[in-house]
Image 1 (cartoon, one colour):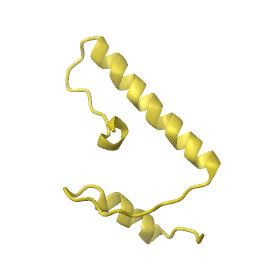
Image 2 (cartoon, rainbow, N blue to C red):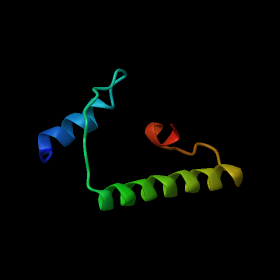
Image 3 (cartoon, rainbow, N blue to C red):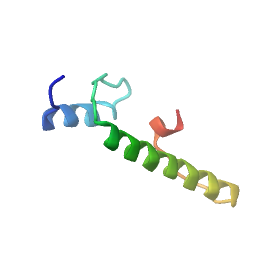
Length: 66
């Protein structure tokens, strides 16, 4: 496995904004992956708390929702 370049990350990030996303495999080490997953779970929890408190217009990343 080779290291990702900045171009790889830009392609993955910008490609996923389109209606038909570009499938780009990005691999990360275990520590980064765990930190990233924890961050996404915290975002989900925050959004759920806000909606359960009656707030409207709460945003959540589409990929996190899945």
